Length: 190
Image 1 (cartoon, helix red, strand yellow):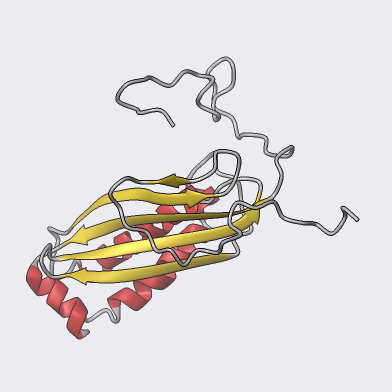
Image 2 (cartoon, one colour):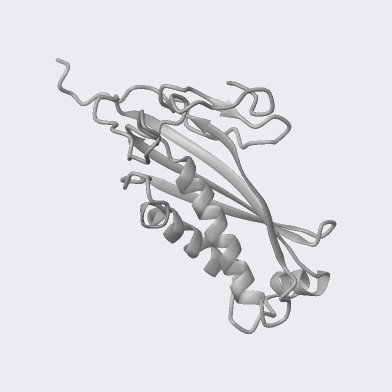
């Protein structure tokens, strides 16, 4: 993996560009199916009073984290409708978790997406986090318009040709299936 600060990508490195530099959807038909998992994280910074309202269930619109959880799953499922060159994927699972960080006065959001397929689910995990964060903002904007959504990033991905990626210095849950990245048997080999 190259360091973005020391090298510039060429058109050949950017798979969503053709040889003339025009946008295209990557053809994944020749790729084999593997188990692919991606985990992303982000946060919503807010006033301490807003975080307290979320923690105590005092937001008048309802249970902020329950609604954000559903929104995150929906966001992952709608990724190809929002990101023009993403493939529509038959996602096999999306999980979100929320941590109320009193010290930072923030809601930390983590999302993992899984698929058995020919292309990764990084964008689905990132979109799940972004959609959940936007929902937290929407649910709480009546009491805190100064909230900030920030630091949305990919933490970990496994599966496919490029193998495993882990963001340095970021803890990631280790309960991911051991078979992630392994080729999938179609039963036709026999």
